[in-house]
Length: 178
Image 1 (cartoon, rainbow, N blue to C red):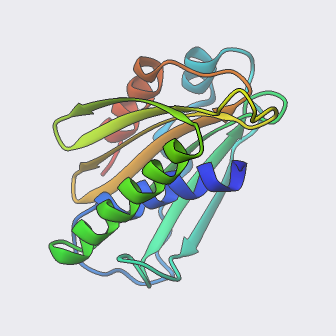
Image 2: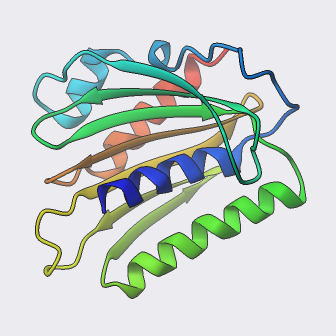
């Protein structure tokens, strides 16, 4: 199920950006968007060192785009991640947003509860697993369009992180976009 929540975050990022195609060799520098101190302030504790990856999106509306991801370990089976990508406009973007909605509806049909807040060109969502889902992570994620990019910040772990704290991280990351 953790893999499902990571896919939700990636889908949110891939579906929300704007802009033209970029080459697979473009370094995104996702780890430069947040500091370990900011991550610690949002989720508590001391996060581990960040791990940065750039991957080429293999399917969906952003196929062929480079997506930058950075992940901080934030406790036992918990993490904070930031992802960014340029994504298509128009119908492909709308198709991506529809896929996100479908994934959230599928989780809710399985008993997950959803708390969401919309803002400007973005949304934050806190997904809590059903009581029968022992060991499944609580996931808080925020995603938005900013400066021609789709960007998301999320936390997955045993304990939930309030939307406001993840939204603060998103705002800081957006402020550092070139």
